[in-house]
Length: 102
Image (cartoon, rainbow, N blue to C red):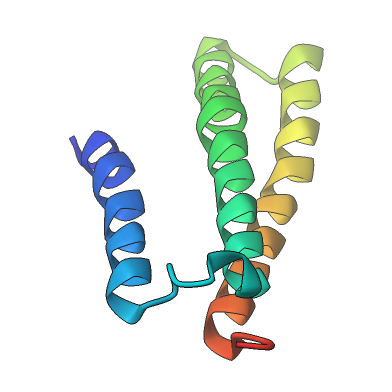
């Protein structure tokens, strides 16, 4: 229940904040904001459509028995994706706090 609600509420609340703070005026002059939005969309896609199914498949394989080569390959992919998601989140937070040029 939490995931579908968050998928709807988080982007809508973000858009509301953009309009309430007045950043919708001259939107493209606030490059830090649209870069963060594009980065958020890419990370959201990676997390939702790549990482979550990957982890679910790993859980299914782990329940079936000892680690297989397929499980290890999936673990390696998950280990690559995890730091990308974390680093991307860090960039978004830095952009939102510092508002460079804004």
